[in-house]
Image (cartoon, rainbow, N blue to C red; front, side, top):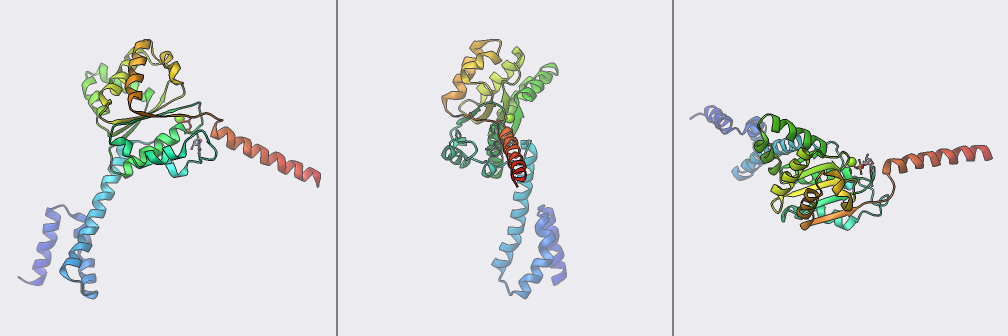
Length: 263
Ligand code: ADP
Ligand code: MG
């Protein structure tokens, strides 16, 4: 077989095996191997490395799309000095994602603006980067989706959907009171994930006030029981980060005004 027809055969093998990135890189890699006098092993390693990188990038992009995280926030961007009530060591420990292995839940409790969503989303990105199936929803969206599912006879499918992700983030529990159907949906989602996979939940309501979100306080108690059984809880207090930034800007402005007055 001529060298040219061997080359054509190799290209069609790569295409047949759907190794598109390797197929595309083949001519360049062959030239490089000849120029750098690479052996077969080194050449093949380089070629497959290109394919592996492309596969990983595709997988990461797919996981990112699926996760529906609402912001690019990373744990590394969190300003711990501004929020001393957040235990940095505990966040660092969570960032290793070991908590996913024993289905530990994470609760971020605190008033608006203190960084609950930022921390939850940061954990979400860490989980996606590690290759875990991750999904973000707000409690309101989860409720709306389950309501539609109930109307359209897709309740079981929807429940399976929420059981699937290795990490499920439910943001903003308690901002709106949940009707009994929505409470039932949330309860079932929490129950079916219990001891199987981790849920990160953010809420503005202290645990003692959870009865308020639900018509039926026994549902609230049963749900908290499952959530807290194996969990890490952050009680975040202090002032809103936005307000803080706002106040800092106002302070600076005041200072510069005063400075210009005194000169
Ligand atoms: P919450 O969910 O508690 O209402 P968010 O997480 O949405 O608050 O935070 C509000 C805004 O303030 C976001 O833009 C977030 O990135 C920012 N923010 C809050 N806390 C911090 C922090 N400690 N370091 C950096 N940015 C923060
Ligand atoms: Mg939030």
